[in-house]
Image 1: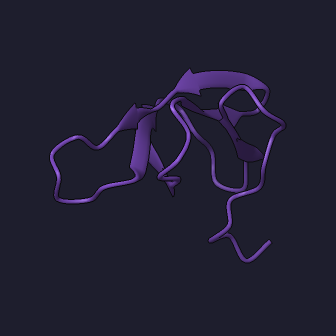
Image 2: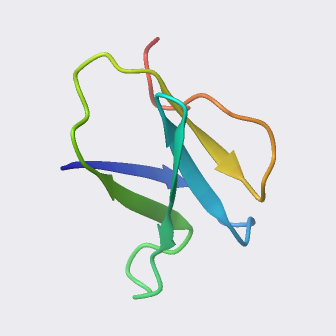
Image 3: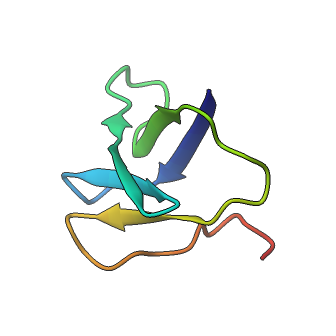
Length: 67
């Protein structure tokens, strides 16, 4: 399993798209990390293409990725 996470405090929905497959993300509601979303995705190979969708919008690159 690979955990993907993104900080997005305003959207009401977030997904990670990995190699064309979408996975819903869960918002951190614990209060310890407000605005963070995460999802665990199985069988992710190193270097695979991925991005985030916020509120069903366009696919966005990972803002923390150097590529």
